[in-house]
Length: 147
View (tube, helix red, strand yellow):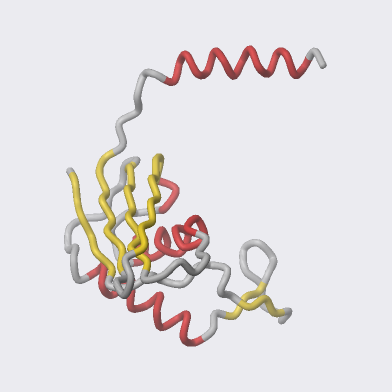
């Protein structure tokens, strides 16, 4: 099963959180505050995704291809944006857990004055070609152990 989703904007990255020290802590032991404008954009992304999908969430490994359409050449860290996007897909009910993303392809293009994201999700099919690479990795490890 393949699905395609769109976002009308680029959500903020996870780096847009402010670390604070209070009595309450997250799982990692750190407490963060999400600025109101960042929280609103994340909620908007979840809302947009929810409005495009009403089926059951993917519960098996998936492959995600994401095209970021950026309005300018400002520096953006796509892997941090992807972390936010993965969480949004979970909260929107598209995938059960973002650890089900076994393969992801991120690409960005700059189109002056345009902005958005195109997300393609499909079931992940493991390829058999990894066996040769695994043998190469084993040989490399053996060389490193001998150093």
